[in-house]
Image (cartoon, rainbow, N blue to C red; front, side, top):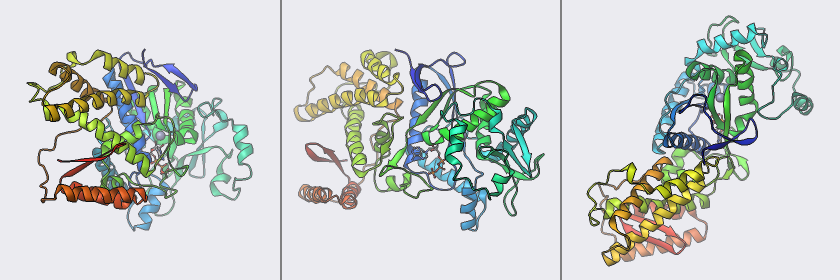
Length: 484
Ligand SMILES: Nc1ncnc2c1ncn2[C@@H]1O[C@H](COP(=O)(O)OP(=O)(O)OP(=O)(O)O)[C@@H](O)[C@H]1O
Ligand SMILES: [Zn+2]
């Protein structure tokens, strides 16, 4: 089975055929840099990271671009509240973005364009839209005339008439922007400079771009008129992506993207985790609490990428347990390879288990069914873990050594496609003489804390043990431990 993916534009799952054979052009709407990234951003970044890795795994040459929105009211507000500048706030959170994503093992994009670095492209696009009759200036602003684009609404399935009926009571007719627009659904391509705000020269006067136009301009500048995959969170379908289509396609007359892909939201108590709502946990908070970055990756992978997921301590705990299983499988070769007489641990693609690789690709080719791919990985890891236990207890294996090498290398390869990697720690933290009985005692205390849903305490105990070189492995049967 070849790759087929759900396309938000057509509302169907379709075979994937890129514009150019063997090549994929992909764009992902990245973050607005006014705060630390939260777990919603982690999900989006992990999902598109894995989509990119998978496309490469099945042989595509992928060009992957991700933007930073570094001009925005929210950034300006933060700068004001900190007595700082928009530039300084953006720089700080772009730096934080790279730190967080490196911890999560996200591969860097080929380029990270920023709105402030794309001003010429943005102005060119607005100019072209004006020439073609899709944009009009109004008192230093420039607006997009949605009524002039016949296909407006095709991505989200919303009709202007319905939108207007629904919004009529909510529109504030006293609003300054509203008064300048010919139609309430027209949106700003360029905003006139307000006093003391950063502004750029333009044919329409000093000002700054609207949010939607930057993505259209960056796609056009970096990737061309039509790309293969345009990705982002489902919250961006309307209006952001709808507006991107309206802007780009009105100018080029060609599809902006052939496949529109959207990741589901990370939710908290049924609501979108969001910076604006303040119900978020940042990536760094979670990792600093001792959650393994690979467990967070697994938390994301365990759900179909389009479905919403709830962020709970239980879900993170389940993912952590899952990660321990996979990690044991991944470390198998480093721990037992020598004893099994393996001379070369380097992966030999020709010697992978074709049946397992095929099971994996068959699953993932079905609309990026990562949970399906993960099932293959779990099976391999459990098998190796079992063999590892037999080696430890009986000094021998049930399966021939070369067969185990094949299984292990297949596991390593497939896990790497999903960004799951484990390394043997070279410098082992010194244990400060904690006895087995003391460890068992702390594990018992942790069990009680978890029973009482006191996860902060249970995390504290686990972290304390970890600092003393003791790894805990939770499973249905209870908690096991080993000195690392
Ligand atoms: N809770 C979430 N779950 C999944 N993806 C998300 C979530 N929140 C944001 N994203 C995605 O992350 C990317 C960057 O988001 P962006 O910086 O625009 O967040 P935001 O919408 O400004 O912030 P917020 O919604 O948190 O106030 C987008 O592709 C967006 O769809
Ligand atoms: Zn965008």
